[in-house]
Image: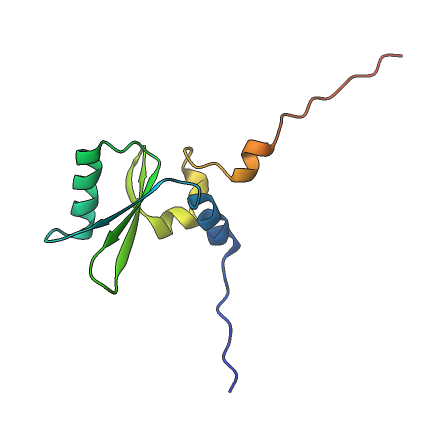
Length: 106
């Protein structure tokens, strides 16, 4: 039987594209849990939001977290709900200029 393709969410793809433009930091969690290691790293390095943290749990698993003004979030949640985070702007938004409407006088 033919395998069905997994449907990719356009909203999540858009969020992933936006997150590519955010500074990334790679760390290893060591003895701490991944979230704790991410929080300690943010505090120690004084990282300002927005930032993406890649926390290596072991040789096979890497957890992704997004550091925002509101706190620390799972990167997958942010990809799906990127519109809730004002610090994330689409790269297309930077290129857009405000449109002015010229009035005609007769």
